[in-house]
Image (cartoon, rainbow, N blue to C red; front, side):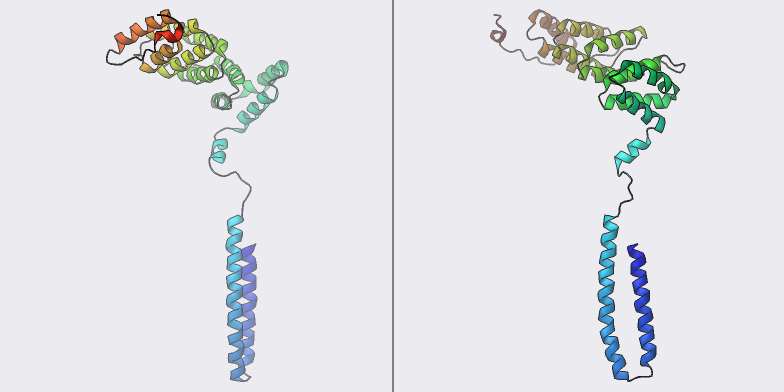
Length: 261
């Protein structure tokens, strides 16, 4: 609109200057010179003003679409997947309506849309809904055991302190002969320790030692720190740590802190 207005004003001024020039050919040359001198500054001034307004109009122009990563991120999720995500969040407090909605709309999703729903619910920390979608995925014909699907969901549940659900997924994963990686062991051990379940943390630790992948130092150090109030369990982990990582050091705080000498 600003460009069209600028061109229209320029055309009017140009036609006026041509008309005045034609008229001045039959009039006094001095008057023609004085008229052209008075006309040029006006034309320059209008041109500068309109160009400034046009530039400012372009700067503030917005077509209503989202900008940047938000728009690109939304495009990665299909309309059907977004509809299911919004519906599950809407009926999350009504179990009957939630199950009916999933049976009506969730089961109709394609494989990639189901994975997109699962990933987005994990990102938004709706971990209970994500677990429900994962169970729906396990019943599909195309489903194959995947350690990475388990990993993301288990970590999301552990960070939300939903350790009962973590145990269910852990048992399901072991039945499918899948072993988690070091990051998954670390987050689950940290989750059990922070929730006050050192025995469950030790069970995960024993499972980690039987894993085909070599363990990392981080889950050991988290256990050594979290088991400070439990010296018997801590000494067992400490001995294993010294055998597996002989070149690493362990910080042992004074025993008087915990009342044992």
